Amino acid sequence: MNFIIVIAIIAVIAMFIFWTGFRSWVIRQLNSIERAFIAVMPAVTTWLRNALRVVGRIIGIYSMILGIVSLFALVLIIIALLINAPGFTAFAFVLAISMVMLAWLPAGIILRVFRVNSAVIPKAMKTFIAWVAFVGFLGLTMPDVLTFKSLLGVALIGFIMLGVTSSINVLDKIIFPFVLLMCLTIAWKYFFPEDFRSTTRYVVSWSKRANTAKDRGAINNEMNAATTYGVILRDINILYKDTASLAEEKHPLLRGTIIKFVSHKQEVCVIDGQGFVQIQLSKANGSFVKGEKRWIEAEFVQIATPREIVPEDDSLLPSNQNQQPSVTQTSMVKDSIFTKGVYQINVNGKTPFNIVIVSTQGVECHRYSLQSPTWNYQILIPGRSPIQAGPTAALPYLTNPVFRLASAQGDTVTLTVT
Image (cartoon, rainbow, N blue to C red; front, side):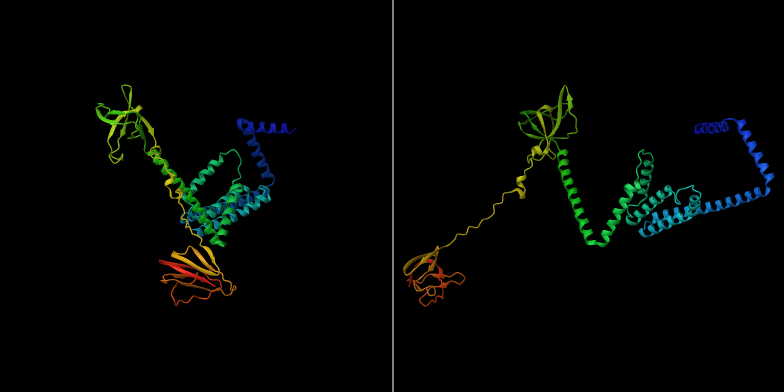
């Protein structure tokens, strides 16, 4: 049944479009109905006409107000983008969006009451307002990014997205997480400024380090790409000044001689089935700069890169050099115990041992005496100044005497322990 009704409606529409007689008959019937309605109920017809006239006037005035508000909002946004002051940009966008929403509110309520729209503000308008608000948020937080060229680029991307067949919810999937991240970053910068500064500096330092590493690699690559060397494969006696006359020049080059190609971009010159390349010879100081240029048979030269001629040597780097730490060898001085008795000690320099006195008078009283014919020696007690020996030299009282003897000229010292 529904299918028949649809077919009938389509047939009537087709007849109304393509059949002039049918269209004229329908118009005549409608005019007759209108005249009959006016003749039967003239008061109702007059009221309807006046009501429609008032509604039309209200709609016209409201449309004009809505257009003026939209135009003012657009001008305000353009001025804010041109001035590009963060505070004014935020104020202008908030004011423009608020004015447009307030101007639309009466129409939205009426359309919602008559169920033309499911919401006071339709989804398309919400999406448009969200994009405008995002642009204003960028102008507030990142005014340097919000330029005329960037706005044109965003507009072009939007036009490209119109042709994308797959549905992508950019506001929910991209814009909202991005705005949330920006808000968290702003809060971090405001509440923890030092932490934000140090973290930013640390991240930037890693970026600088990566950029420097790439620049260093670029220097190495550019160096290898700039110059092409060659090695002579056999002993040669003849070179050529030019390829026009092939004038020979006696110039011996031994096997293994290093030469430089004038330009690796220069094609091999073929003459009578023989290929020639232009080379540059080194000067007496070994440099190729402004060296003589000659031509040679191409097969006599083997191509070599700069690093194959001058290889890298990491052992020259200070970090890779074997640095032998200086080890100070300290010899341990042994102790020699002297008990009760008389001892002759030859002193030449310092005694290679510590003299430790252990008598039989008990631990608290170790008695000893020192003498020599010339008194040409010193007594070295750890932690004390050297004592010059002599008949009247006073030896300090030590519970456990430990000392060494020293003599620059040499002496024989008699040690008596009681």
